[in-house]
Structures are given as structure tokens and as C-alpha cells.
Length: 103
Image (tube, rainbow, N blue to C red):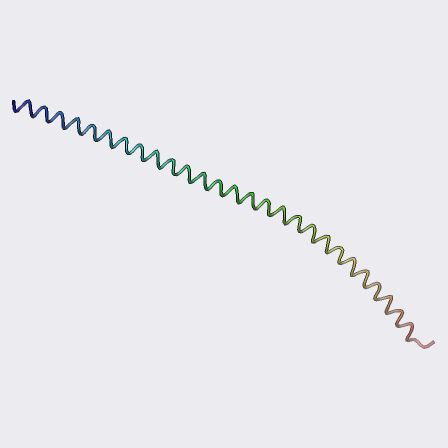
């Protein structure tokens, strides 16, 4: 009878160990799956930030290009105004000089 109980206890112990190993393998697999999901989510967030930064930089570059064209036009207008004012100054100076000359 002792032998039968010992065999029964041994079998129960083996079954409990098998259940424990199965539970541990399920937990390990679940943890690995969860960590893979965390990694994938992190990669997706990083990609979204990267895409947003590229979009912002492209938009910023386009805005800077428009601003550069506007400033170049303003500079051209200012240079034309300077040429016009210099011509007027030269004409006025010539008129003043003609008034100063004794006739």
C-alpha cells in the first residue's frame, strides 16, 4: 500500500510539475508577445514623429521659399528706387551748381 501511495504521489508531482512548466511557458510566450507589441508601438510612434518632422520641414522650406521670393522682389524694388533717387539727386545738384555759376 505504501508503494501505491508513493507511485500516486510521484505521478501527482510529475503532473504538477508539467502544469507548472506549461504555465511558465504560457507566461513567457505572453510576455514575449507583449514586449513585441510594445516594441512595435514604440516604432510606430517614432515613425509618426519622424513623418511629422519631415512634413513640418517641407512646409517650412516652402514658406521660406515664398518669403525669399517676396524679399527678392522687395530688394529689386528698393534698388530701382535708389537708382531713381540718385538720378534725381544728380539732376538737383546739377541745377544747384548751375545757379552758383556766375553768368
